[in-house]
Amino acid sequence: MNRRNIAPHDISYEEDSVSLTFHPYNILLTFTLAGITALFFAFSAAYLYTRVTMGIPPIKLPSLFFVNTALLLGTSYTMILAKKAYLNDNTEGYKSMLAVTIVMSIIFVIAQLIAWRQLFGQQIFINYSTTASYVYVISGLHFAHVLAGLPFLGLFLWTAHSRMKEPVSVLVYFSDPEKQLKLKLLTRYWHYLDALWIYLVVFFSLNYLLS
Image 1 (tube, rainbow, N blue to C red):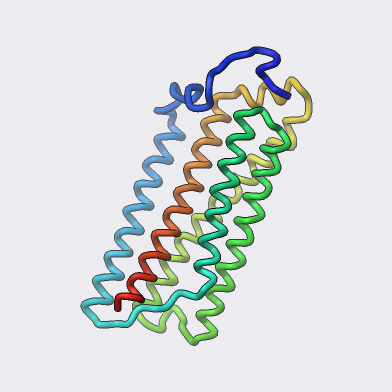
Image 2 (cartoon, helix red, strand yellow):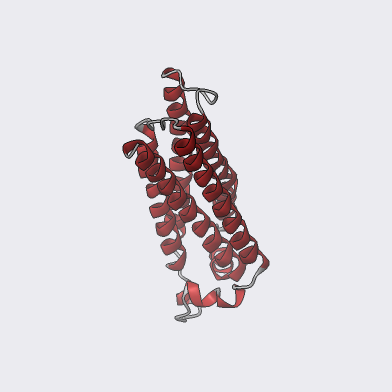
C-alpha cells in the first residue's frame, strides 16, 4: 500500500521528523549515547593506563570477536534497508528487514557467548589478569546494550505485524510522525552499537599487536 496513491507528496522521512528534533525521546537518546560513550572511553583509558603502568600483557581476542563485527555490520545494513522500505511504504520489506535484523542480533549474542567460552577454554577467566578483566567487562557492557535493544526491535516487528493488515492501518502507520521518529532513533542506536563494537575490537587488537 503506497500512501502516495492516496495523498501524493514529496515530504521525506527527514523532513517529516524535523519538528521532532527536540522531542523528549530524541533528547533522551542523545544524552544516553553521550553517557555510554563517556563510560567506554573511561574504561578504555583505564585499561591502557593499567596495562602500561603495570606491564601486564594484553589479551588476544578470539576470532569470533571479528566474526561478530561482520554480524553487527550486517544488522546496520538491514536497518538501513528497513528504513528505506518504510520510506517507500513497502510493508513486507519493512517487516522482513526488521526480522532479519533480530535474527542476526540473536546470532551475535550466541556467538559472543561462544567467544567468551573460547577464552575460558584458554584458562583466561575474568580474574586471570587485569587486562582480561577489562576485556570481559567492556565487551560485557556492549553485550548488555545489544540485549537492551532487542526488545525494541521485537516491539517494532510485533507492531508492524499486528497493525499493518489493512490499507487504512498501513496508511496510518506509515504517516505517523512519532513512529518515524522512533524508527530513526532505533536505527541510530543500532548504528552506534555497531561503531562502538568496531572501536572496541580495533582498540584491543592494536593493544595486542603493539605490545
